[in-house]
Image (tube, rainbow, N blue to C red):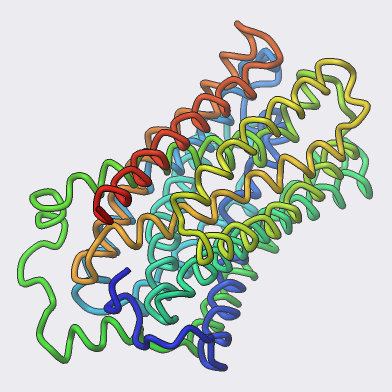
Length: 432
């Protein structure tokens, strides 16, 4: 890895590095909670924002479609914010993205429902979800670049994984809120007002994240490029398209695996186990709480492993575990779910392999176009694969049965193994 990735060649994390990682991870957790809490309330939203006589599966499919719209909007925010992040600085865009997330999250919590304003309700829900997608499109890749450029080169794996772990803590917070509301409120109270609470809380969280990011400083890498006048004169994205196509392809392929792991095993499984396997809501969200916590730990494990053995080997090891854990979880559910919580925890730990993905992408692009290259690749891939996954899984389950989610995750895990093997082969060729 190039020493240009960080401002020092020391392998240790100093107090300033740790403070930056902590603030970035905390802010990321609060923002990602805002983005993902939507899916935990897919069932009440499907009842409130569509006609009461809609078929249950069709209403849920429509809600998953609105959820997916947030992913489809990600490239717009990611590409625009990345352009200015490569031209004006990482920190400014890092703060703007979290503000753009807080506003629509608060708005969703205040929306009237279908019974009050008819078809305007789902349309407004769709609009606010799109704005959330624009915000997160700049947040996630910008956060990875920000932390990677703040730490020593040999600690980039831990830095990116700590940020990813922070994002997954946002999922855990959403799961805990959903579990708490399902446990403390009756089904009718949840429909009457309870579903609004997580979005109102999220809006407050978002503005807290804006305040936290005031304490962060610009990355040493960007400051050095600015001082040496090495910033790209034209469009950074044009240079990415002309000179860094292999890096774009690599980034998009590993992002596909990441989307399958996160969207299917972490975000959709709580609803799927209720609708497909008859698991009670309280047990479904208990399992998700445990899995989300295990995911946060898994990210740190795989990030540290990446620093020790290299990201390609860590990816290969983790993709094998992801395939096995996904099948173990869904085969147990098909057999009655006797070990659901324990196997969901194991699956969450296996999903931690996503902590390796940003390391591969950060290394793939040079500093001058890193934000634009990573953001465009990641967000376009997430828009295509993450956006299509929720409705696709809904259709696959209906057509092919209960193990369809595990089959899909396994296919992307095989893709991750293939990428890892190609990277390892390239490393061996360079060493000869």
